[in-house]
Length: 294
Image (cartoon, rainbow, N blue to C red; front, side):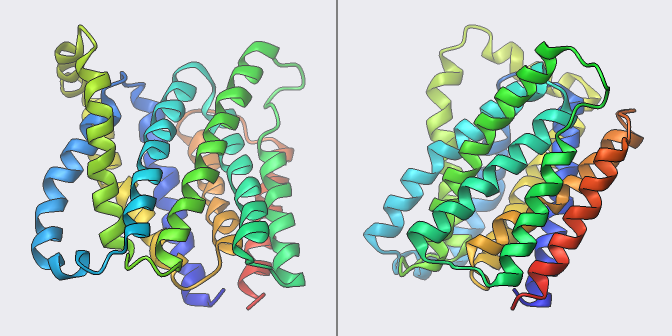
């Protein structure tokens, strides 16, 4: 991975950790992601279609198939992540999700895409994943088993979704599909809103739930940050996937967990233990190793 690609991944990771913090703090209802998809699609899709219409004519049938496969996985990811934040601790759900996701992704990238890392790359991946394990440790010597198990459960489910959409999305921009990050992401975003709509409208209180999102300053702030930060961070990742193998990009972007631990300690008043500091050190060393592996 080049130094430029590494810097882009690190920027995306920091943005990702930031919008996750706002999502956790808001503790919003189930219509949150639906509103995010609708707002982002309404703002971005018209100019994308206007300026890049000719690019869409070059998308292959396989490209459209990948869009249809990826969109529902992203919807599940958003719902499961938000549910995890409602019932589990940020300091458990976030590192577990970001740890299991790249682990599964790297295995799939090696076995299916043939993205075989070098020895230095494998060392970096191992260090990053080891750091994630330490970050996922309980903050107390004796901690209630139920919150820990709840956080691990939802975090692992989120990680499975991360692996699924990472593989689909990497395929979309790395293979001969006619797609680039822009022509892939925004049709996928519109598809997510369409998939979500019947489930939201079937809820008896959906209008009240939407009003609740805009009645609280925390949820309004979360909507603003997530609407900009989520697509912004992921578009950066999709761009880097055109420059570097998925096996490097997937674990390296999890360095955002360092920012997550810092945000948790400073703003959510979660403890910074020796294990978590060790995890940060291991992840930093892993990122450097991945960056030097090219």
